[in-house]
Length: 203
Image (cartoon, rainbow, N blue to C red):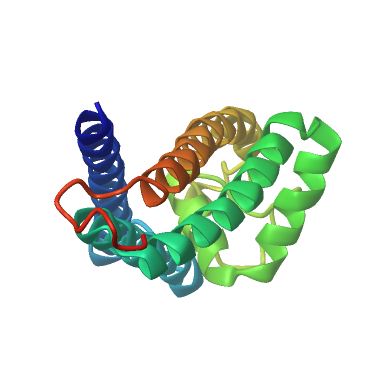
């Protein structure tokens, strides 16, 4: 029974970390693809997504190696890091789901004003100019600008923002529960004796 429990915990932990590795590689790939094809010109956005992907990759790799080798130190640090990631992700996901329209407007305006490259991306993809008003004397990459038929971007962004926040919050909440599952599995697996090891050895 002990052997079966040990093997089950090991395989479950390995499967969970393989999932995290795949998600991290997907994040890095999508960010790089978006930058390569010019869908996202903001280096901060791309760099941020790639940074999170690389961090998740190394955490998952540490968990995978720790699970396969039953490495006590690696499993301990993996468990602590995963728990901290869970707290941050759960908080952010809850905030995304709880945010109201007025708070959305404030955050969107701050984000808009902080990045010229993001402004260009949004204007180009949503075919709009400016945030709350169109500056006829300025420049804009939208196709409608030469015809003077552009509308401000605020309303168009707002239409998508609510759906995006709910989607991001829901996905984040789902993954936060897989993280707490990972913490529980790691704790359980770390305290089990490896049936192949010397029974008198301290684990």
